[in-house]
Image 1 (cartoon, rainbow, N blue to C red):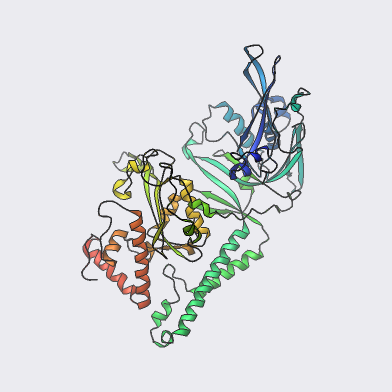
Image 2: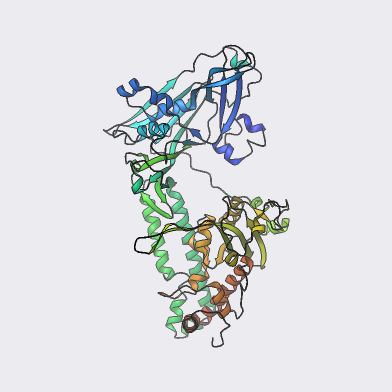
Amino acid sequence: DTSSEDHTANNSNDGGHLIDRMQGIGFLSIIEFARGKPKISTSRAFTVDLAYDQKSNSGKHQANKAIRFGEILRFSLCKEAPLRAWCDETRSYEAVVQRKIATSLPSLLSLCCCCAGRESRAGNNAHGLRFWQREDSRNWLPEFITIRIEKDRSVTVKELVVKEDGTEEWMTFEQELPTLSDTLFDKEELPQQQNLPIEKSYRLDAVVSFVRAKDASSHSSCEGHHCVHVRAPMDLKGKALERQLHQIERCIAERAEDRSSDPDLNNNGNDALNDSANFTLVSGVPLEERRRQVNEQIRILQEKEEAHQWLLVNGFVVTKVDNSDDVRSFNAKFKEPSIVLYRETASGAVGNNGKDVEPRETIVPVSVMETTSISNGCGPNLSISDLMNLPTQGDLVAIDAEFVCVQPEESVISSSGSKEITSEPRNALARLSIIDCRTDDVIVDDYVLPREPVVDYLTRFSGIRQKDLDVSGSPHHLVTPQEAYLKVRLLMERGCIFIGHGLSQDFRVINICIPPNQIIDTAEIFHQQNQRYISLRYLTNYALGRDMQQEVHDSIEDARAAHELYMKALSLKEEGKFDDYLMRLYAHGHRTQFKLGVANDK
């Protein structure tokens, strides 16, 4: 937390924000005129734009010596730019040089590479990419760096270079500031910056890359997509496995307690029923076998010496990366750097197997439930007692979400007359409803304002109309996507179990990953292998004997129906009738082509 050192610590509008405390970096801008008083200003930024201009223009230097990443970073933190500025003394525009100097260092250093996803005719783009994509520049991006800002605001950058023989060497890049007025830094109007000198060490934590499409490899087009490499601590996987093991052992203990209290379960002669008691409603693996598998995974994980694991997130596909060289190399012409993120490490720890400061365990505060509506300024319908009694570990919450379309499907007709989809439609969260299954109270019912313009409200399926998302006139509790996300995240961290129908799609659009042991999906429960999935409306009509969604969808109604279906499944499971019931359900569906109408032959 750098807020105690930063000059914005006393400013509640800046220093109080979490992102500013973690990523905020201060800059001092100085414009000196030939005559007249210099102009001094300060600013805050969450990212540093890498500047290649000076290095690209130094052709002689480049020909004799390869430019290192540390040189580019040093110049970007303390750079000059020619411009014309208005001078109050001469009452005219003058050609001056603006100096922009970093005056503080964040815990998370975010660097914008400023050279990815552009067409080749953009000159600056070509200059920047050639440093990254040199044939002899494998691992040009260092894993460890150190930055030091002196009292005179001069910047020194060190990077750890691994030579071909495997030895490590620190390379230092430093340059004193151009001569400044002796009294420039003594002026009273100059804001107090972070205590100088300051030095911080960083380790590479994530890299966002732009991958060009196959037909765009010539850089004449900017088509492609982004992917991200992220360094995840291995202990996160260990904690997840330990939580799974705890849940499994608790289930086994509950089974044993049930058998000891009811001897008929062991002596009824029904082996199929006894065997089914070892399974869950969402898993076909016996509990004892699952416990053995988890214990084995924990043992293997404990034997590994690596503290971290690199992961590649490419769309919805997440894969492990065995070698960090793949993360830091950009020799392949189709791969271009977009954003680089460094995390602060313990002093002197870099280069020593990366024993850096472990990230603090993030816990979403309960206060995220107290959102204010964008449209009418009203707060949520939750009292203080409701906030104190939110669902927690093992409690059931029913959830449903509605969406609107922000990008329509794009397609072309091929020469054969067939339709080819060139761009998939994309939806955004528009309503989120969550019910506390203990009391049947609605604890979240938010309409969500998408970040992008809505092209189709999908009213028939979502129940959302244009006026519902109107910032100036919506009668509902309207929130931002981030506020809605944090409410789901809070309940997940509290250990709640989410019940819903088709939850994979809901969580994907919300952009959150919920542990499988915290999900109960009625679409999976009432599903027979190699058969179609059954809609929530048809299931409710058949299993609960009532029709729903007659005009438009209502997320509260859908969430309640999913909870009732789960309770119905539990009841059938306890009676040993679930499998027969599922067979009759599909048989009736095939006879009626899964058309609605309350069944009479259940």
